[in-house]
Image 1: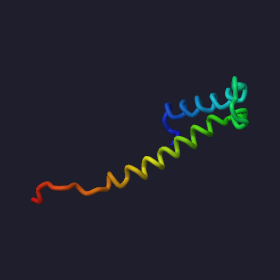
Image 2: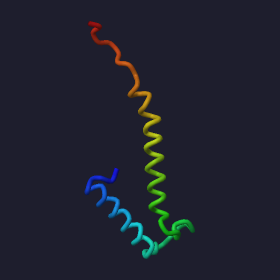
Image 3: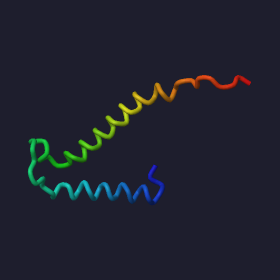
Image 4: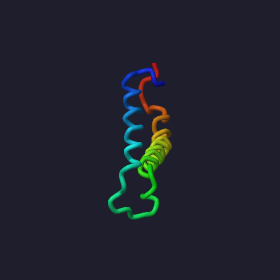
Length: 73
């Protein structure tokens, strides 16, 4: 999976961002969970995964539909 240089650079960049996130405090946290390290990284990961699952559930029946009409040659 990590054979390409661009993929390795991308994951290295993500790791650097996660480490930098440890040293940055939120300006005005609205909820207690926002003060936890890596909260927003996890929130984005879970939210993105939920969107993929929901989108697949909505689009899958539409994509599996047989075509209507057409010629039967």
